[in-house]
Length: 466
Image 1 (spheres, rainbow, N blue to C red):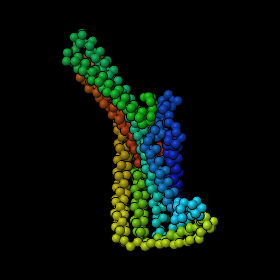
Image 2 (cartoon, one colour):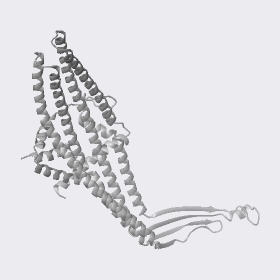
Image 3 (cartoon, helix red, strand yellow):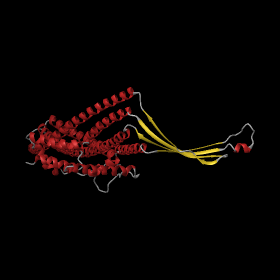
Image 4 (cartoon, rainbow, N blue to C red):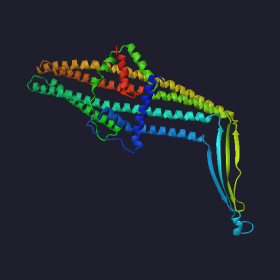
């Protein structure tokens, strides 16, 4: 196994270990997930751990894995010798001589038997069924792994959306303060006769509009808070730790500056990693293998079967006392003659195999499409962060200039309103771009099944190093 394969194997083991610990914490130790952390704020990593511990779907997949393992054990037991113990006793209640007790006791008989049977040959079905059950267990593990990353992505989304809502509220409150300041100036100018009624009414409308936007932003925070509370199991609205976007500055600048050739090379590297790790694609591969095994299993019905049994025991009778019974060894075999039934079953399994092959091709295409979409989205969001950040700086300087002229009664409320709207629009776009970039990284991590975030960022950074 090459170095990359070893790293992938170690990464998957770490993920499965965390998965088992998290699910076992809640459902096998009988403990409930924690409802609060001692820290004053909830970090992103804490939110992820709470979401994993609170996930019922993960627990369900963990039970599915256990059920598949039990199926494997059941199949193993069917290949072992079958043991059975039997007992019997009888006595006549009456006979032709009447109800004499002595004669009735003479009819007492009892016996005990032990039998052992073993399948000798069944056309190789046992080995194939063992392989099918093993594949089913691995498919259950892939389902659990896919849900593990889905829960991580959901936790990231809920966390980022709440932070984005809080940033939007801050932007809305800033716009409202600007509108209130504009209205206060307009009131002074209106009372002194330096502003007409139309401009004053526009200032009033602007203030009411900004206040409504602030109220909508508050509502969004409440809605996003409900989402993250349901996901993590927290009883109260969490206070989230603010993110430091400066840690992503190099990555944002690098992705935004990628050429088409560099983007294609980065996509190829991401696809290589995702193809090796993505649980949905891995499950499609396993399903294809399982379908092939099912064809082989159905074809084994053409073969004869052979089994052997041995039985012995003890008998007791009032007349002869206790004596052993004769041991008996027997062989039995069967040859199926209804070949048309077997042929029909084989054909059905072949059709299922063709369907599994189509599902695999579809899973490959979906992964390629989703991965390319997520990568292009990350690059677009990175470029948007840089451009909207510059636009915000220009819009704020423009607003300061317009506000100063407004104070000096050298422009109208309409001009100030347009400058304020430009600032708000660019601020909100910057907020959406920043958190959209983080969400795109989370999506890439999910598709590539990266066990650690640093693995993804290192891969993305490597593409922008010139």
